[in-house]
Image (cartoon, rainbow, N blue to C red; front, top):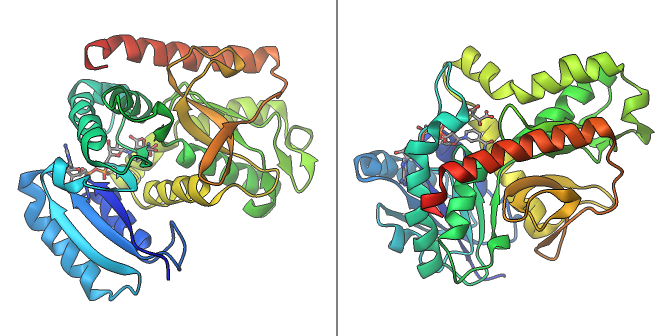
Length: 325
Ligand code: NAD
Ligand code: LMR
């Protein structure tokens, strides 16, 4: 039997945290042979609700779940953790853009990066979900000087999964047959869902759909899906976000399939001409707990323009939080 790993979930009494904790404890993230200790972090007013989450987790009698720690102290919550799902922060409401959350949520991620730096395992893998996720992850990474910035990532997997789902229903093809999707850039309206390299059951995706459907229906649908869910549900996506967080971590730890890749927000090293040091989503392949940007993809003029636009937005966000970096 493997020894237990420690997984921190911030905002664990919130909507996404609640949806994620049970699936993580069931083994969906790291496999059904990996015992787990959950370290659940909340703000003090939510500690009562967090106790309720703990009771329910206990009541599931999950075979893999060895212990549950509940705390409002980040130094306790991140102690020795191997994995962090950094979710705790405010969601947007109707009519807001995610960047409108930056002034309020941004200040959470500096202290959190520092607490991870000071307490977590030296090999910790961090996924930031709280919006605006890319720039929050950038803040956390910049406040963890003893860790490698590559250990901090931001969630683009929900956008990636949304893009696969839309193309699957348009082409009437199972999601499992859709490979090499990319969503570049920021988890925002400026993101670029790109099917230029995508294969649908082995065929080029672009040969199967009209350019007008691609640019006028598919792209805006994926870009605006978060708002569409908020309008329908009256609250932002929660179960799909938790599922994407689990997918992101599982790919990172266990690896991507064959020649396929996934979209992850990672620190740019200048690949594809994107400014170094931005938290930007690239297509990556994962193996043995590491990820590498997929190299050598051809980028046409349209893609170039879209990739630049989302890069420019991230440059502006970085400038807006420069005091927190
Ligand atoms: P929620 O309001 O239901 O829950 C947030 C929880 O975080 C609350 O329980 C709150 O008490 C807690 N919290 C706030 N500040 C905290 C802190 N400093 N430390 C620990 N916990 C803290 O919100 P939600 O629906 O779970 O969404 C959480 C975040 O995830 C939001 O910012 C939302 O916009 C974002 N989100 C991102 C994606 C993505 O794809 N990147 C998708 C969906 C939602
Ligand atoms: C999403 O994409 O569903 C989340 O980022 C929540 C939001 O504010 O749209």
